[in-house]
Length: 218
Image 1 (cartoon, rainbow, N blue to C red):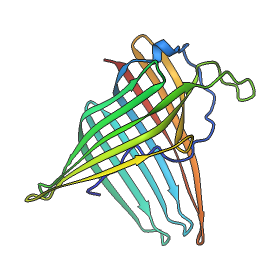
Image 2: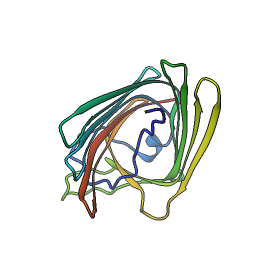
Image 3: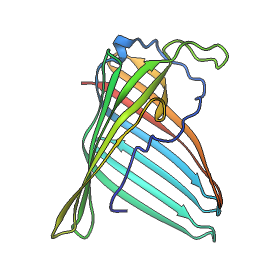
């Protein structure tokens, strides 16, 4: 797993569960934030019966990625990667725009390395109070991604190669609904959950998961 693509938030996100939180205002949310912790757990089930359980745990400037795959015959393999994170930030502005930056580098036992530098940009706004779905005012925030870019720098011990991946999105084709779990002092905790399906000629593939971020004002 030399090239690790993490924080895959481009699935179709559904409504999230009920949670309690301190009151969050636009002024409170609009800040420069460091990500101090992140916990991402996801699962995929393919039409052929193969399954994958995926997790990312980030804390203390290090990240551990675990990918456990079980094929249709029941054979299981586990791949674990450890990386060093030099930047992981959110910038949320009062004008309704946001940006997320992440820079992570993996060092392998054979001396090779893989670095991924990401930047996502878009717009955001609070969802209104909804009694039917039982969430409060300013409890849910919709983030739309308008642009995403990734730069990959791979070193095989001799040669360094660099590749780029840039994407743009229009309208509401790439939106994530975050639930604010806690907003207290200079700290903010929120989560995003997802469930998605893709039906093709061989059947339906399914994905589900949840990401919890703990942020702290710079």
